[in-house]
Image (cartoon, rainbow, N blue to C red; front, side, top):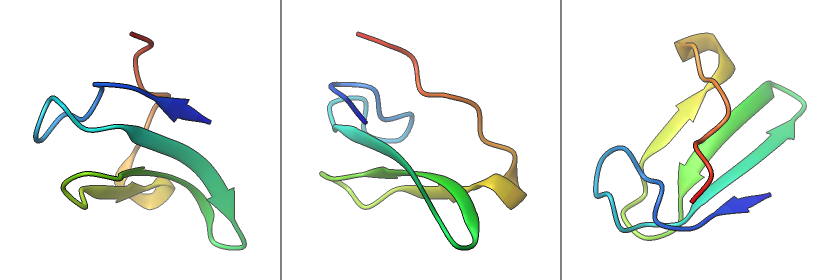
Length: 47
């Protein structure tokens, strides 16, 4: 799932919310910001 203009680091980037074998994650497609479930993520805010 993508959230436009939702990056907590660069504020203009698109956040991808997804999951893999290691758990959930969010990743900014613009600046590369990454946070996984072990770091305590919640769903990105909707724009």
